[in-house]
Amino acid sequence: MGSVDSRDAVRARPRRTTLADVARLAGVSKATASRALNGRGEMSAETRDRVVAAAAELAFTPSAMARNLANGRTGTVGILTNDLEGRFVIPILMGAEDALGAGRTSVILTDARGDAVRERQQLRTLLERQIDGLIVVGGPRTDPRPSLGRDLPVPVVYAYAPSEDPDDLSLVVDNVRAGRIAAEHLWELGRRRVGFVGGDPTYCASREREAGAAAALAEHGAELLGTGLRSGDWTERWGRAAAGRLLELHPDLDAVIAASDQLARAAIEVLRETGRAVPEDVAVVGHDNWSVVVANTRPELTSVDGRLETMGRTAAGRIFDALAGQELGHGVELTGVDLVIRGSTVPDE
Image 1 (cartoon, helix red, strand yellow):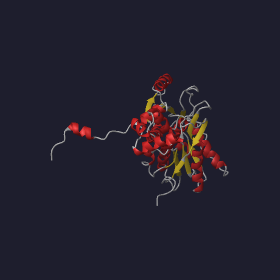
Image 2 (tube, one colour):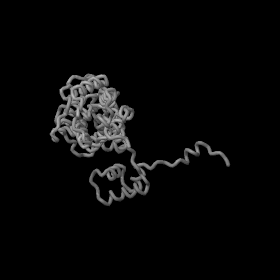
Image 3 (cartoon, rainbow, N blue to C red):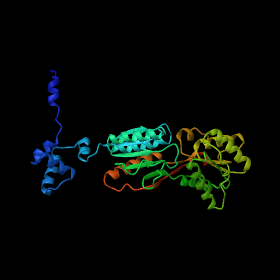
Image 4 (tube, rainbow, N blue to C red):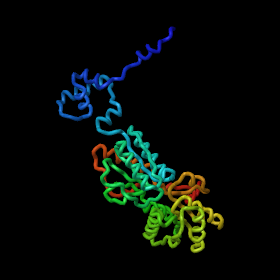
């Protein structure tokens, strides 16, 4: 068998069907063919049908770039964050990127690193690159953040940390609900003396989780123990100190809700050191469902999952909806949470 000349191979490669081919077969101009395929412009139904039939016969698929140019878009969405290394931000970015990639949209990611001046500069750069939409991912705090303004030329969605402007759309974890379902789970297990180990009280996430747990117990005529322990942070060192103090004040408690998984792990260590078995004597629930912590705690930790990847996908979906002509919406929308039950509340069989 003889060899094939490389030039012959190039000549033998099938040529991609173009819009000009479709127009030629349909007997119309390229401009008319483009308008027919994009559903734009006035023309007879017969002409439009003829173009569509020609495109189908030639298996013509317009490129994403061509579609974007026809729609006056670049096919890119910006993601602006202030905490790229944060463990709460990464899942949101993954969910958003997953949804945007599925929609054949490119992502431009920038990290302002908590610097307001840098954030404005990066915003200006993103707009100069003519992004179609913007997702602003807060972190590590869930407290309201300053708005980027109402005059931006693209749809904007805030995720995790809400905008201070009620006219903006913000997607936020329902931390009150998170605390509530933790307490309801413990109550259903027959636990009646439930204590709380909070994180940094300046974070609204800690306050809201405490408020949700307290409200759920109050509906059953019970009190959340340990709510007076206000000073603290998110370290395991504080978690051990707070859990120790909680046990001193309420030695007969039979459950602990911690505002984070790290604090919950610290509480389990203190319980073990004081001779209390988990979950037989004291059941423990954490928050955030951080895989590094929950899977390596003994027993494995029951935790409330904020479904951050879902939040990222939802943010991307709202951008797509806005680009399709739907109303973006405004105000704070609370996203769902899930309780993931493990051995720290229900013994492994």
